[in-house]
Image 1 (tube, rainbow, N blue to C red):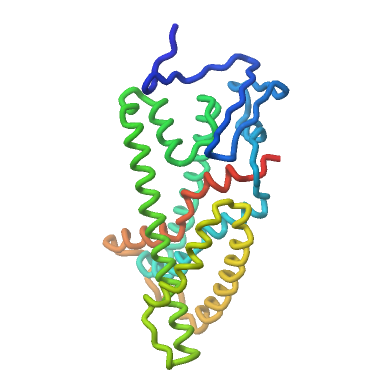
Image 2 (cartoon, rainbow, N blue to C red; image 1 turned 90 degrees about the vertical axis):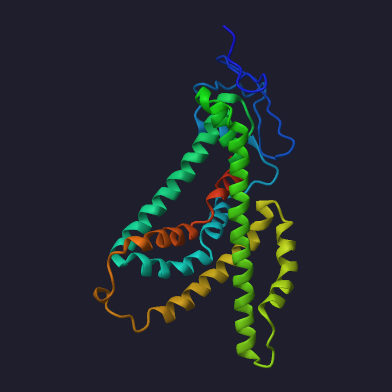
Amino acid sequence: MDKPLINNGYRPPSYSTNVSVTMDMSKNKNIFDLTESKQLDFPSLPVDALMQHRKIEHPTTNCETMIHLLKCNIGTGVLALPQSFNYSGLAFGTVGLFVIAGICIHCMHMLLTCSQKLCIKLGLPPLDYASTVEQAFLTGPLACRRFAAFARFCTNLFICVTQFGFCVVYWVFVARNIQTIVTNFNSTIDWDYRIYMALILVPFVIIVFIRNLKFLAPVSVVANVCEAVAFVMIFYYLFQDLPPTWSRPQFPALYQLPLWFGTVIYAFEGIALGFLVFYDLDPI
């Protein structure tokens, strides 16, 4: 019986017990190397075992991957968390923060698992975020398959919009903080923050041109160290003369819940980067 067509004549591949396949991906350095000497049983192969057969030109170590994860998940959004507790109350905000953090981690893990299983099922090279969504639609219910291309477009659109928004916020945040520091040290310099934005645009663009995570690791290390020092200084002043916890609201008003949710989600802005750091990880 012929295999069903999924899209434009594409047929999902099936594999026998011992299959020899070499999957090349010219646009991505991460490829699976399944040669004659490494015959693998796709249907029964564990996901982790398959990922060990990737070829990566410049793989990142576990330490470098952790550094990137810390940098992409802990940013200026953390500084907005106190405001989120102002919206939610101490009791509700404390519990809700852990719940949302757990949901975000679970979703990142679920996305990676789905991507790996689709690679095994369809015999595809590593998939990015949008490709995972598209292939999930193509292999899903018949009613959903016609929306595969639209789902891919929407995923890329939402990622671009959210990442662009984060970058703009960081850009303004850095410029305003530099303006504050310069003004405090030399009050005669009274430049508008837009001038600082123009000055820091050049180093920002230079860093953007570094597309390999292996080479970006030193930049992330410097950023994490600076961020840790800044947090220590902020918390030193933040925890002085604190009022009693029982004098503050414990639960939110309903109209403030959307503000709390949006502020907390903003603190976990690195969800879309899970694919990148994982597929660049050293398979050994």
